[in-house]
Image (cartoon, rainbow, N blue to C red):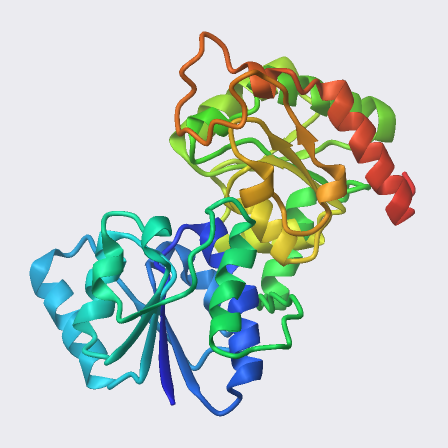
Length: 337
């Protein structure tokens, strides 16, 4: 049995699909399971024990490279291709593999008419349950009964050591992930600056700032200008180093974005900051008891950009509220300052 999973990205989405991968491996221990993914998310899958092969999908190298990639996929003669991405591009790749059995989401949950490219679909359900649970619906459809949640992300010792180095001996080790792919999910930089001040006063440690985009660097500059008691590592880590940092942290505070879900997959307790995003659907799958959900008449809107004069939902979450949750978390973990 040769199986291909089509899930290009993004980081959080790939992490969210890992429990399904592990369930599938337990269901079919002798199957050959491959995954086609974009380069950005490759380190998440690298050396994963449930995978046989990782196939890089490079969409930025023109039609000739795309044609070559499809040709290589067709040579593998997959028995089953599973489209977890549910967009036009993933639907086309799924169809062009030549596999006779192509499994995807039901029509209503598909985007860009990607349902047209599958031969089999999971039963229809509302698109409101957690995305991890939606992926697990594929496992149920295939006959799985052992639905235990495991992520199995591989890290090498060098990345863990790099994470410890970034923290520069701080204790407890607190990471503040200040970015978000969707602007509507951003917690204000001023709130992060205030929270960093409160953390330093309460625990005597300097929290570490993580993030990678150009906007994240600007936000980090604003935070460090307001508060010198932080370790600014924004834009200074590779993804494996970020993974090592998140795993060695005692707690991670973040809005709804990839590193939040990476931290969850790595087993690190998280404090999630939610407003526009729907925590029922994309919240942390574990440690949701520490999450903070902002209030606003329009929340959760699930939009990429806030359409209001101010981002009231996330602004309603104060730094003091986040500190209270962090104190609870560390007390439960019995981490002493």
